[in-house]
Amino acid sequence: MILQIALGSGLLVLNVLVMAVAALLLEGAFRVTHPWLVRPPQRLKLVLLLVAVGVWVLLVLTVNIWIWAFVLFETGVFKSMEESLYYAIEAFSTLGLGDVVPKQEWRIFAAMAAVNGLLSFGLLTALLVEALRQVRLAQLETRQKG
Image 1 (cartoon, rainbow, N blue to C red):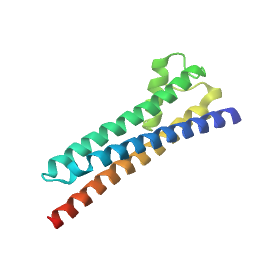
Image 2: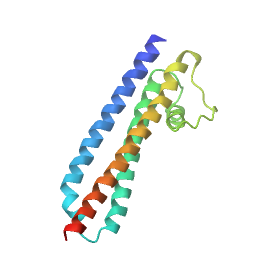
Image 3: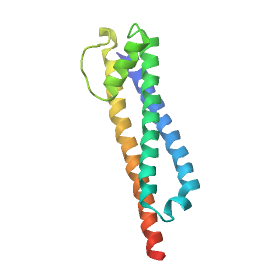
Image 4: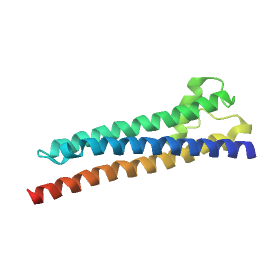
């Protein structure tokens, strides 16, 4: 049980690190594109921003899911990579169909993937909302000055 908790906690930390690096890269992209984003016309740029950040969030989630799938497979929790990936997606999304279940001795570890999914969705949703908010505030400020 201690091994499962330690391994799961390590993966949680790794995935938070992946999200932190992704957030820093996204911030860099915003700095580069900020002057363009706040210049008129602005509405279409908000749509493009939402799509771009949404794709970025999906990419980060995909990386996190693949990390879990790889470890689930390599530790022998599941027999195939497809089964491991399916379970990781199911756990991350907290869908919990129950058609694929981990081996008895790995249940705690596998369940931690759901915890990771909740954390990931929460943090990345906050990133998405904050990105949109910051750009919109800057756009409105530019409008008022101009």
